[in-house]
Length: 254
Ligand SMILES: C[S@@+](CC[C@H](N)C(=O)[O-])C[C@H]1O[C@@H](n2cnc3c(N)ncnc32)[C@H](O)[C@@H]1O
Image 1 (cartoon, rainbow, N blue to C red):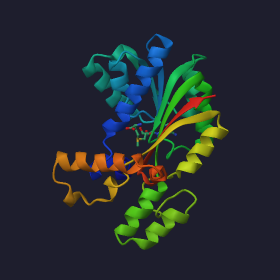
Image 2 (tube, rainbow, N blue to C red):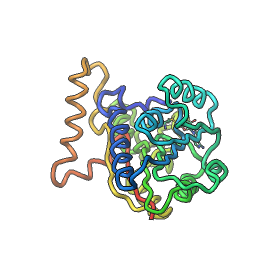
Image 3 (cartoon, protein in one colour):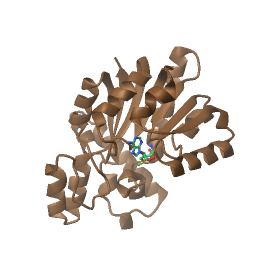
């Protein structure tokens, strides 16, 4: 996983923040439906989200093209004793029809994956088709503006400019990420593909700008995370979400 996908290493956007948000969303959906959920995790990798969801009693199918990730997922699921509730299938957005065989899911996760697919709009349409009407999507993508700020503050002005002006938000030809997103672009993609955005959040707004050398302890990490929360909580400052190195969007399938 590229560093840009690991904001926790910079100290502020704990991956657990997204996992907790998804766990809470799953809880709410399960309470509403009165049963455990059927969940799809597209690009779910080694199961960072799938395993905790299965531990909470939900059934999760992880669709991912990487055999290595799926092997690690199977190992983790076995170790956690929840193999019967986690199914790993090698594939991508085009495989969803065949994998789900007409069964709709209640919740779909797509975290750190839309950056890598050939056609994000087609992938979101495939996810929408896999979801039951009213089903929920948790989408996490890398934010473009975050890398513009990070590169500029590191004195990499040409890379900052490239990230800002390149249609895919890449800072150069050696950028490990094929694509980054603006929040508006994500919301518009979701609207076009049959979703209504319910909640958006920027992760690691300040956190990813602070050099690692200045973060000494867990309490530093916690203080930065709290600063990020406070920053966007203030009236009139919601727009700062768009500076998150991760953009986390919860949306409902229309
Ligand atoms: C950055 S990792 C994210 C893993 C996991 N979702 C997480 O948040 O930790 C990206 C994942 O997307 C998968 N991937 C790459 N191309 C894909 C595609 N076209 N369709 C679905 N998944 C893809 C990779 O194999 C990898 O597991």
